Amino acid sequence: MHSRRLLTAFPVLLSLLLLWAAGALAAEAGPTRIGVLAYRGPEEAVASWGELPARLARAVPGHRFEMRLLAGPELREAVRRGELEFVLTNSSQYVSLAAEFGVKRIATVMLPEALSSEQAIGSTVLTLANREDVTQLADLRGKRIAAVASDAFGGYLAAAREFLGAGVDLEAGDARLVFVGFPMLQAVEALRAGEADAAIVRTCLLEQLAAKGMLRPADFKVVSQRRPFGFPCATSTPLYPDWPLAVTRDVDRQLEKAVAMALLSLPPSPSGLSWDVPADYQSVNELYRDLMIGPYADLRTTTFRGVLKVYRPYLLAALLLLVGGLVHVVRVETLVKRRTAELRRAQARARELQREAEHMARLSILGEMSGTLAHELNQPLTTIATYAQGLERYCASGQTDMAVIAEANREIVAQTARADQVIRRVRAFARKRTAAREARAIADTVREAIGLLTTLLPDLPKVLLDDRLPPGAMVEADHLQLQQVLLNLMRNAADAMRELPADARAISVVLERVDGDTVVAVTDRGPPVSPETLARLFEPFFSTKPDGLGLGLAICKSIIEAHGGRLRVEPRDPPPGLAFRFNLPDSRSDG
Image (cartoon, rainbow, N blue to C red; front, side, top):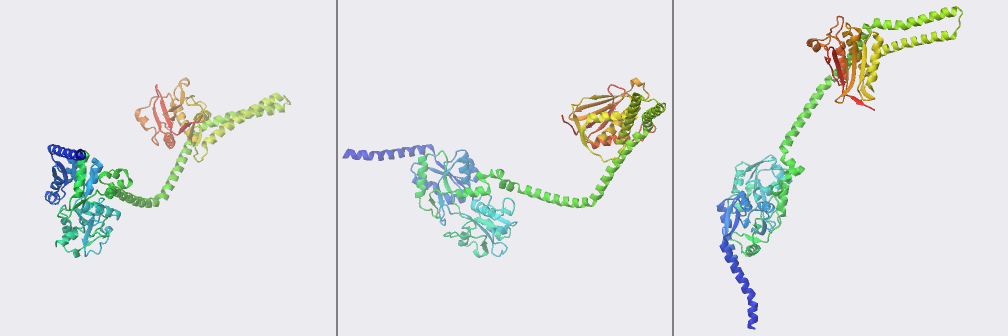
């Protein structure tokens, strides 16, 4: 029996020995450090939490606890460097530290007035009792609001969420924020002094100050007041969990468990503070998410609402510019409409004048070559008359050789067709008609122009056509206008070589594709031209001919530019002579 008792007592003795050894090792390892958020200064923090290290030391034998009073940024930095084992901070900073460094709550502070560990603290928005214009949070849009600080939970953040739900975004400037700092009574003083239209304070502060005789509750009213059942204080927001005590990642599990058990077993402090099981801080997480701060700050750049929130001033400025631009456009449109009819008539008149100028240029070409044209028509007419008179005499002599008659008749028909062809070409070139674009082979247009000019100028120098285009290359253009340009250029080339021997005169027409454009080049072998004359060739009314009007090349230039191209002139390579080139950028190849 005695040995059985020894066996039963042995595990207990072993556990006590291990606890003593662990305590001895912990004492040698140094104090257990608790970082405490001293948001109201060291004196206030010591008054609230100063007895906590000693109470924990008594409850957890073998451990010495040390309290470090730190501001918010200092507390975060200490956790980052691994200098703390435990953290006692407000709900908002705990959520940030949990997301960033993985700290874990093991107990939650319980205020005497708290309904539960999840319903303990919120914000109360106060205004003066005589402010009849302020009853809801939305009434404070554009007004001055006093608050403690931008990171104070009950003194700002809880209320900011409710303001946002009411359509008043405090961060976006929907109201003018006046941060007064701690103590929180300063926000109330700013309200009383007329420096603010409302004040954000922690729940129950109004009642506590009234109990101390520091203010009269009748002087104030709570904006958007709500009273959760059983909660003794007025509030403007839902209630959230209060401060947690959290453990950092590398703390020993046995120490974590011992501290948690010690906190839950501690009796209430003289001020009424007690500890409860760790609360669910999901409501604080949702507050952070709605405000897009802390661990949810990236929502400001990854969501439409966040981008709208961050860039709201710029978007509003852009909207104002857009509205101003629209007003300006409407005004300009109104002014423009007064002149639209005149402008359209002027454009129509300009097009008509352009067609008249082109038509007159074609008639000018025909007029200058009218003598040659008469000669060209006179030849087939003379031949027809000769054959007709011969047939008359032949028949009058009584001869009836049908072969002779048929041969004479064929020649008459051939000469008639020749004259008809000349007349048709001239009429097609000279007639006045509306400009019309069509897709045709540019080589055919060039050949027709050469044929027409050959008809009008029998002594035309030989024309050498060098077609380097792909087979079937098409150009969408007014081909009669292109013929007019080609006739003018080739006639000028012929005039430039008039003093040269016949065997030295030649006109070259080259068709090629350059950078997607169809390029037509007309070159002659005439005498050199000075740079000054070359620079003025396309000027209206400038001519090198004694009887020239100086409109041909100017009209040619306007025709090519109307087709989106450019007409230019340069010395021929090799000299002598000039090369006129124009491109048609709307050319395409249909093969």
